[in-house]
Image (cartoon, rainbow over all chains, first blue to last red; front, side):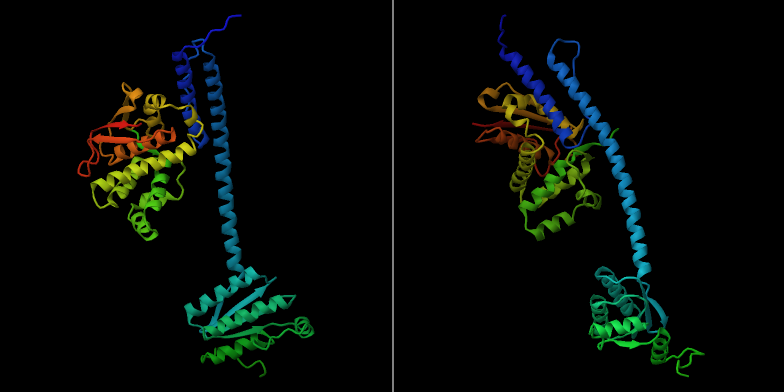
Length: 220
Length: 192
């Protein structure tokens, strides 16, 4: 077996080919699979086969990348749809209604948690400022369970409303919730409460100075 | 005719360079003065993707105009190009650096140029005196591409530094603040 030592020119040629391959691969590494190496398959240089193999891999990677991008676009669109739906649900879960001039009503249905409480407070405060409202009624007829944390949310909400110079009332406490509040020693003394939304509406609509026609005292 | 383009990492490098050179307030002012089209894409630029050459021109002008005179603008553009090359040498070109020599680099300059600028302009190198540490360069076809020649010289300097060359000195003819995009820029790069 004879061993032939490569000439410096041959080594240079190999180095140059490797550099060419590395330049293309550096772009591939950054996500650009559009480049291909120049390959002369007519010669006997074994490097040509290696370069052709690299080209095949780059092509395959590019195809995968296109599919991956398509999936990502689809996922982005779905996430955008979910976010739109979430936003719609958020706005539906915190409907602040101006029931009379200067009187807002926020009916609460379902479970109160910190995030929802923050959204409700934000929506209510923003509307109070926008409309210049004097009264905010939070109706909890639709809440089944009241714990210390839920009460705390309402107390904080009421304090924030008072800071804006408006008055806050809680309505719709059912007997079960009233019992729970007393039983757990929860302090609701900072919040004005009314038995029903109707009571509160009569009180505040009259207080707003423009009693609606046909509205009579709940007692009368 | 296809739109002339540049690899994204030149743009991200430009923003990074401005951040390292100026106070946050000055940097905000400089970036705020960039055209809206460029500002709109800055946060989402991908290093290997292609972007309009005009974005690069806007950044190069911002780098140059933030300096008080021509000498300072020249040094700033050089430093910007060097930063882009240093980041590339530590990143995408990391595997290339160990095998590169100044001769191989000089031979591959046209390829490296095309890899970043496609067929926008041409970078030619003369390796006749490379053994004595001298490389002659010519940048042509870059009309209306303000300051890119000087930034390219800085980029070459950065690559030579990555190859361990020291005492790199650059002399150029063609560029000035008054003639920011000469039809031809010639340069001689020496190292020890």
